[in-house]
Image: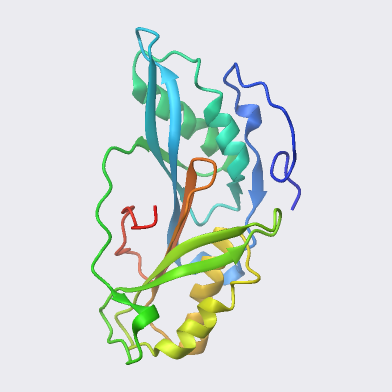
Length: 244
């Protein structure tokens, strides 16, 4: 993957807002991804701009990118882009969110939603896979703690808790644990890891319904949380996890 910013030591001048910082990277989703559902929640915790009185405002944003986009935004480029807003004035904060949505939608050629995030829902009640030896019944939320994968560009580890939900089959803990632990010394970008887990489970476990949700730790003030589902009605929202 070629990137303008990721993995490079560069001194940036961020005094002026500019969408030129943004960089699109192609998803490596399998072809069958087109028939499933999902999106990526990007939470940006360090967004600042000037209000109508030219006073600084610091907010958190929720950016929602459909999984059907051919490209997604490169994370470091998004951090630089958002940082360039710090000296830009908005009489109405909604215009700032609309501008970000416009720039990202243009970059990715798909509708991206952006809003201020004030409160997060609590994580759902779940069965902890790490401590389970018995078969887990259907219609239960399952959580795996301590997921680790490796960034293919920087070789740095990424950490997450992974959530699962299925209405079709009970799940055996042992093969699922083996699959999740296999990413600890390899891996990919967040979205690719979740899609890989999703499609492997569908294939190997013969599932007719499945939702997989990765809640990753933030980097550079941004966390990326992909959801992939066989159901159009997705059970998980943009909640806050215990590690976030």
